[in-house]
Amino acid sequence: MIERRRFSRIVYRTQTVLRQGINTVNATISDLSLHGLLIDCDQSALLTQDEQVNVEFSLSGSDVTIQLVGNIVGINNNMIRLSIDHIDIESIGHLKRLIELNVGDDELLHRDIEHLSDLGEYT
Image: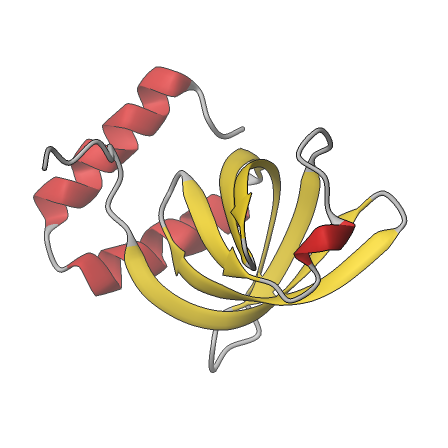
């Protein structure tokens, strides 16, 4: 099978809060990349694919909070695939560092950052 992902994903389980319109949903991040998240959510039925989602989570063992806005790519059972649409510079810095510590391959990380620069994914 051909790998179609352009970004390195890491397994990172942490609690997150999703906000969409008037709905606030507690969920768990299963894995993440510089481009998106895979989220396990028992209340996924409360979310719709046609509206952006605000995501907030803290890094384990620190007071660092990452905030981003994402688009739901797909919902399958309780799993939500989310692409990152907007993330502030401080949050992308923390996310980059988290991935850097877990990927263990600087070349892969730099390739991912080049893809983000090409796509203009974060501001």
